[in-house]
Length: 259
Image 1: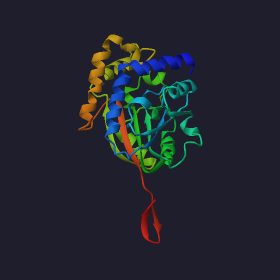
Image 2 (image 1 turned 135 degrees about the horizontal axis):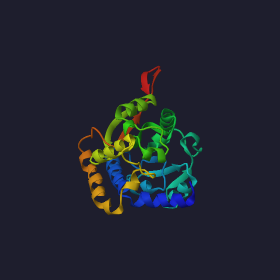
Image 3 (image 1 turned 90 degrees about the vertical axis):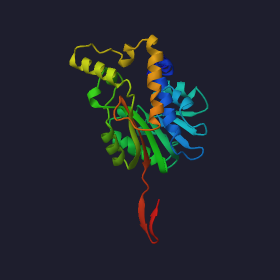
Image 4 (image 1 turned 180 degrees about the vertical axis):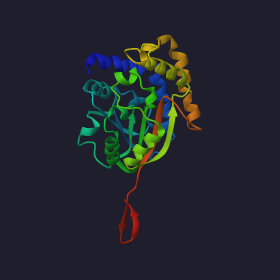
């Protein structure tokens, strides 16, 4: 990514209502997970690094990975968190197996062609009982210009995501949809574009939304965090999942023991 575009994207992620509201939702969801004291957490695909400053427990020991060089530099410049330029299929030796209490991937998995292999790599980096936390776009029938612009391979439903986590040796803890309150208008826009009755915006969904709409849309989307404290949404534009690394059982002289 060119430096100028990376800087533009960093401004967009920092100011756009969708990104700001999503960070509030993710922060609330992460705060309700059973982290150990001072958890070591790796975020894969940090982009320009706004998540690292806003969504994690205050005592977390954070590290980040970002494949794009320009975005990695921007993220590293934001604060004391170490950010390495790397992709999940070529992680540096500093990212050691069995080292992390948590690995997060927010709107990253859909960019990876072999997503199950990526989940298996994450599994290797986690401590026994560590967890993966991820978010991804939902429903292939919502496929649109946004997915083309962002070079997605797929969108997910909850059942498919659960199966892929299981295939990578995870046990799902929670899977819920979100971005549910805005689901009807987004679905209509996507379906009309697919049917050819509305021209898709070349830049994706963000191109439709004017700055004047930021405040009400931000408030509506961000309010989902309150409801997600009590129940899971049955549908939405995005899907959120947490899953725990399975503890391997081995047979030993003293009966079964956990590794």
